[in-house]
Image (cartoon, rainbow, N blue to C red; front, side, top):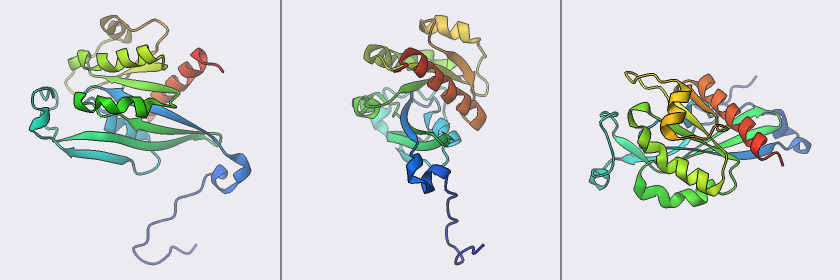
Length: 204
């Protein structure tokens, strides 16, 4: 096979549906939300089959009064618009992932980002569970199916899913799971759980 000129980018291997226009897949949109520094950018990057689009900027004094860095003291950047990635689950289903900015001053963007989504992953950090309440309240109020995924950080205390459910008052029908946003398999399992949950509550 011709590898192309030196320095050229390798060609992306085409999926069957990309070369056969009669097999267009179902495209779905999923939102990844949660508090500041909870791992949304990491989650999208772990599962995306393309290089994720990231809109990160150096942190400034604008967030000094609201951004809690106690659990993530080495964090120097923050998402100011969104993270974007894509993953093909099979030849008939493609997920487009949109990670929301975690800082309060960017919440005005959520309505546009959520429009057309089939569901959301709400990432939680047990050291700062309260940070995910705005996302939980938002998805409850707009009726969007969601799952709660507790991202395990090094040094954090491990809790059982039911303990987290009780602490956050998550309804019984909403899946709560423990996962690691850095690991592709773990993030994939979370997405599959969300898809199954979304289908169960909105079968049409």
